[in-house]
Length: 96
Image (cartoon, rainbow, N blue to C red; front, side, top):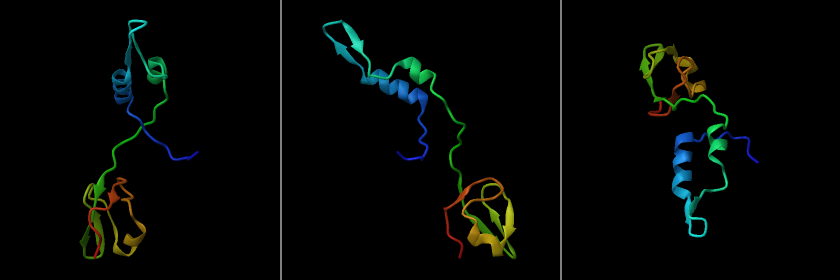
């Protein structure tokens, strides 16, 4: 099993479960999938934020993050795929 964490939107999962239910003619009720709604509602959550995507803007001697304006010396650019100030992923444009 992979150690990679996968985030699931609780509201979307509840909506999916609702739409995945099937009518049972014998019981005259909807049969829900195996997972109980209370299990979904009580499942643990993590704090997560969407990934910000930016680019390095070149200035003499420094580069600046297009998201937060934080800067670092140009000599350090090759080691930074993320802004050390705001965490933005620097993948919108490659540095020349």
